[in-house]
Length: 453
Image 1 (cartoon, rainbow, N blue to C red):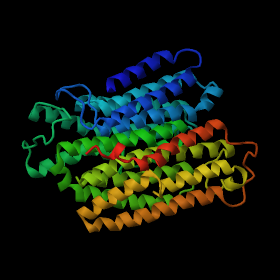
Image 2 (cartoon, rainbow, N blue to C red):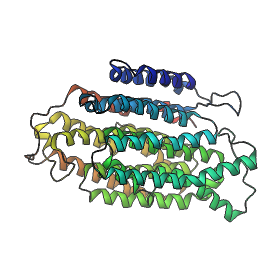
Image 3 (tube, rainbow, N blue to C red):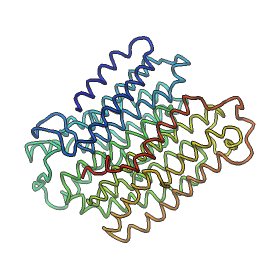
């Protein structure tokens, strides 16, 4: 099934070089996304031998579906590129290439292939930021993105080489690989080097500075793919490594969880002090990904299911928040929270979608975000009551900065910089609707994405 989806994506790359390529590509990506839902009904890994090229379980198939869905929404959100004729053909090709790389990354069954795709995803993302970004500072943002992620990924390549020498295989499908070639202190250091690439990609606090810069300078499609998909590569890799070395992950979980959770609290406070809309949404991602790190490292079914559900929920809600921030920017030509006021008076339809996405971001019912946070909270209580302190503080602050974002931009007297002739087009309405539908319908059948373990 995975091979069929990838073949269809390759065909779409070839068919995109003709008339109506933009519409055809968008519709095809949506069709492939619905087709990939069939993968969610496969309860076990679909492989015939440990050396099979592809594998598919509900972890990988959920993220493949998310990838194709977000890619289709990126095309809808970037229709201004087609209208202004700002290299639309190249943009379509770049988006399709990134989609194929990400689908491969979530579907390949050995670590060398995964590592190649993991690093290759940076190239289309960097091209997107540099070619369609808004400010000259996008060069610095691209440098930060490449520097942080490539340097942190080099120890992972060394780890894969060591795995091959010690175990004779680098398959993701063989659990509990041996690390007896190391003494205990070196073993712990080796494990931290191994997961560093994934922690930086998510990102964990202290290695997060590339994320706000990349988001602020990226075009709308770049922000959507960063928040919706690229951060999930870190969570996916962390889950796969945890399945191979569960005891190492569990022994070092107090350190990683403390850094992640208290880092999430600090970044939540930073959100309350932001004046840039996109920067606030970017910093909020760090707090949500901290919960994924905690759920992964606790090695409980609740934690792993909650981590995957949080990745799906966050990918959809944060992607839509960036899309709404872009709609607001196109009307005001500013991202300042202090200049953007009174959206409710002028554009009540946009204000409605702001409210819907803000409450899903703060995990209010009936969004799937609520189910994810409950699952992660249950796993934290099972592990240690001390986790409840940073969890409670971060949940409170998430509600605080979400309401701060909504009330600041939507209430108050509207600014004179607004373009009063701007109305919400059917294109923008469809974009928000396609984000909201999975968020509020998956709560009725959450086992589609959380019963993989």
